Length: 351
Ligand code: TXA
Ligand code: MG
Image (cartoon, rainbow, N blue to C red; front, side, top):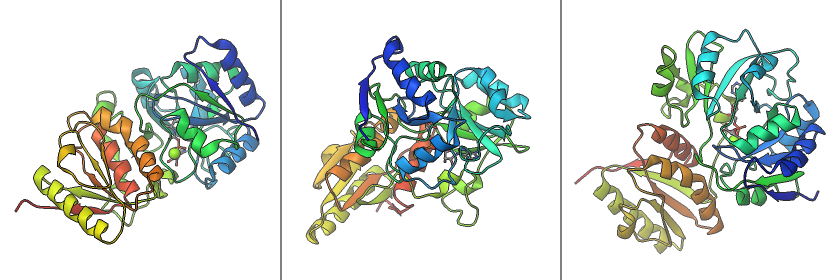
C-alpha cells in the first residue's frame, strides 16, 4: 500500500483534512497528531477498521482502542450509565489529555473495545484532530501510531518509520506538545481509578471529584495484581538497547553510570547515557544525550520517546538513564521509563 503523507499546518487547511476524513469514513486508516502523541485513526464503529488497526500495528487484539470524540454530547452515543463525575471531568479537562473508561453502549463493537464491556473515550486538544473527527462524521478509534512495542510517536517522522506502506495516510502536523500518552481513569467502579498516569495528575482530578485511587497493578513492587488497562501489562516503549535506570544523589549517580559505561566498553559494547543539562558534561560514553533540565519535567516528557528512538538508530547495546523527580508529569515519565527498562533500576548511595 502506498501511504500518502500530507503536511497540514493547522485546522484551516480544510480541503486536506476533508480528504483524510473521507478515508476514515470509508473504512481506511489515517495517522494524525494529538496533543499527547500521534494516533492511528479509524471509524470507531467499524469492526473491520479496528482489525486493520491491530494488523498495521502488530498489536494483540485484546488490547482495546481509545475512541476520540469532538463534542461532549458524543459521550452518550458511546457510553451508558455515565456517572455525574464524567461530566464534571469532561467540563474541566476536555479537550485535553484525559481518557475516561465508562460502560459501553451495545452498538460499540467489541473489536474496538478489545472484547471489554467498557469503552475508553477522549476529546483531544488538537484542532487538526478535532476537525478530522467532525469532518469524518465518526468518532475515531485510535491507539498510538507506533508499531506495537516501540515508543509512541511524537513526530510524523516516527509514524513514517513504523507505518509507512501499511496505512492510507499520515497527517504531518509537526511535533506534538506533551509527548506522553493521556491519563486514563476508570469511572465504572465505586472509586475513580487511574489506570495510566499522564499529564492530568491525581491531584488535578481531585480538584474536581472526590477521592481518586491509583491502580495497584501499576506499582512496580506489585507482581501479583495485573494492571486494569490491558495495554499496561505489555512490555511497551522498549528500546532495542538494554536500558537500566540509576537512582540516587547526583554525584553518586554520575559516578556509578561512568563506572558501568567503562565496564561495558571494555567488553566491546556500545554504551549510551541519558543525562540532563545539569550533568551532561560529567559523563563519558559512546552516545550522551541530555533529555532536558531536571527542573523542567515538561521538557523531559516531550523528549523521552524521541530519544529512545534515537538510541535505537544509534544501535547502542546498553543504555543508562538517570531517574527523575515525580511531582506532576514526573509520575508519567517514570512510569514509561520504568516500563522501557523492564523495571531494571540500580539504587546508589552516597559514600
Ligand atoms: O494519549 C493517548 O491516549 C493516545 C492518543 C493517540 O490519544 N492514545 C493511546 O492509545 O495512547 P493506546 O492504544 O496506545 O493506549 C490505550 C490504552 C491501552 O493501555 C488500553 O489497554 C487502554 O488504553 N484502554 C482502552 N480501552 C480501555 C478500557 N475499556 N478499559 C481499560 N483500559 C482501556
Ligand atoms: Mg500505545
